[in-house]
Image 1 (cartoon, rainbow, N blue to C red):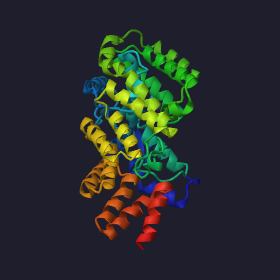
Image 2: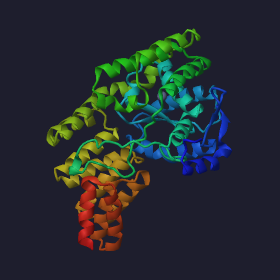
Image 3: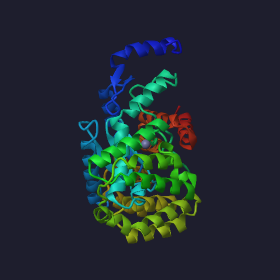
Image 4: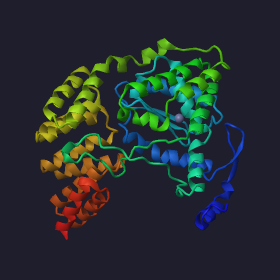
Length: 423
Ligand SMILES: [Zn+2]
C-alpha cells in the first residue's frame, strides 16, 4: 500500500467494496476495482464506436454473421460466465484481427476469417476471446494500471490512436472519437485465454487441436507480412513458438471433437468468391495513399463490378471522385454506399462534404449529424462548422470549429484559422 499515492489510495478505498472477488474462470481471489456491472456498462458504451472506427459491420452476406454468432453462442454457453450479455459481430475490415471487450462484446474481422480453414479454428478464435471476457481480463488490466499508478481509468478502457488510412482531401485523419479500440492484454492473460479457450472448445464439441493450428497460422502470418498490416492482431495477440508448443501440450488433454469444415466453407462462400474484389480494393487504397487517385479509381471500379453490394467500394469511389472535384458523381457513389450499409458513419461524412460543396447545406447538415450519431469525428465537426457558416449561424459555427480544433493536426489547424477569422 505504501506505493500508492494518497489520491490513488483514497480512490482505492472508495472502490474497495468491489475490491476482492473470486475470478469466475480460475476460482482464485483477486483484487478488482471494476465491478461486473461497470464492466458490462463499459462494453455496451464502447461497442458501437469501436465497430464504427474499424470498418463497421460486414453486411454483404448477413448469413456469415449469423453463422459466427451461432458458433460464439455455443462457446459462451459452456463458458464460466454463460450469463454475460454476449454479442458477436463480423467487422468489414481487411486486417486479420479479433477482440473482446469487457462484458462479452466480441468482434472478428473479415480479414481474419479468410485465413481460417474450418469451424474448429473459428471456435479457437472465439473461445480465446470469450475467455478474455469471462476471466475479466479487462477489469484486471484496469486494476493493474491503477495499482501501478498508470492512471485511474476505472470506467473507461484503453484507447489506442488510429492511424489515418490515407490522406483524402489532404486531411485524412478522422481523429476525434474515431480511435480504434484495441485490447492490450498481457502475456499471462493470452496464455490463460489459449488454455481455457481450448477447454471451452472441447466442451462445445470442437477439436482443440485447431487452437494449435491457429497459433501456427499467426506465427506464419507474422513472419510473412509487413508489420503494419498485422498491427491490429498482434498488438493484442503476439504470436510465438512458445504459444504454439504450450497449446500443443494442452491439446493432448482434449482428444477428438469436430472440425465442421464444410459448414465453415459454406458460410464463407461469399467472402471467398469476393477475394479478388477485396484485393483490388486494397490495391486501390495503396494507390490512393500514394496520391495516384485516377489509378485507384480504376481498381475500385473493378471491385464494384465484382461485388456491387460492398459499401466500402462505393464509399471509396465517392471519396476519389470528390478528390477530383467530380462532386455530383461523388454524391451518386456515396448514395450507393449509404444504401448498401445505412449504419456506417463514413459515407455520410463524405456525402455531407459533397453537399456542402454543392451549396446544399440542409442536406449536408443532415448527413454530417447522422455520421456524428454513429461516430463523432473531427472531419464532420469541421464541415458542420462550414455548413453553419454558410447558413449564417456564426456562433454555432464557432462551436463546431472549436470541437474540430481540439483534434489537432491539419484539420485542427484549419479549424483554428476559421476561428481566428470568426473573432
Ligand atoms: Zn487475446
